[in-house]
Amino acid sequence: MTLGTGNQTWSARRWDQGTGSTISHREAATIRMIGTKLAMTYHPSLRPAPPTTESQLRTLHSWGDAVQADLARLRVLVVGAGSVGQLILEMLARTGVQRIGVMDFDSVEIVNLDRLHGATATDALLHRSKADIAARTIVAAATAEHFEPVVYDASVCEREALVDALDWDVIFSCVDRPWPRHVLNTIAYADAIPVIDGGVRLEPGPGGLRNAYWRSHVAAAGRACIRCVGQYDVSDVQLERDGSLDDSSYIANLPADSPLRVRQNVFAASLAAASAMTNQFLSLIVAPSGFGDPGPLRFDLRQHQAERISVGCVNGCAYRSGSGAGDGRVDPTAVHHHAREAIAARKRAARRPTVRLGRLLANASDRLTDAGRVFAGRRARGG
Image (cartoon, rainbow, N blue to C red; front, side, top):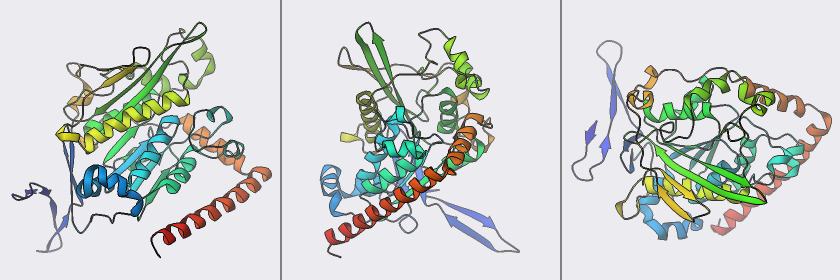
């Protein structure tokens, strides 16, 4: 690695011994420098600054060309395309991020429609995946000139999906289960990829809502990990791995206040949580007035008050002690039977004649919409 004395940016290359006396090298496309701010260095040829578009003018006026060029080149993965994840995905697309990934194995259901942005009753009836709905949403919302969506119909709890996740610069954790949080927490330290995590908790009371909270924080080198800020209990990871958390009888026998019970959510709370996580993202990447990541935050709806959570990792935290382990990490993955069953059920449903016909008609409609969008975009650019 070499530090440029003028612009204080890093470059890196890897030298490989070839056959005989031949020595070749490969240039690094990007370098991540993690502090309270995530500073990225991009190779000018391998990852050139993208062109700006007319639809990004207001964004450019907010933080300028240089910040936008850095932000647009980030590779951002959203794990969990539920109510919070769908909103964050649209934010990223409209902001001009060129390469956005989404990872989710679940299907759209009718019970999701009161809080799942971009999903329709038709999507539920046609057994579409949440990842595909997310892809449709971000393609429609993208302002980048050369936008590249990447869709993983998979669970991050499986080995192949974890490997896919390592190809990204920043990861949003929009999951609500302990096992995927455990996997993403491992990646944040072992592989030095910042993970932005958050969540919602509603407290129903007699006759209405008692209170609501939403949290947000960044898991990365030098910060408290997702487990140590209280987002999950390590002992619950095995319960999910062995299928207990997908067993309705097991869940029914848990105490009423157990965090493992199905968490209630509403669209308004999802908006708030997505906003809180977006703020963490902007602090980490844009760093207004030079201030970066603020640390873990919690918002109390009843008091209308945001509070900083002063917490660090416990002594001997396995995640922190595994920082930089890379492929030497303790493998947090295994076969995720529930995910495989969900994907198999969706494939079986897709073979039904009525679903197959419905998808053909819906896909044709989507293609017409996409063609109209491309034509309108060209007209707007004077093409």
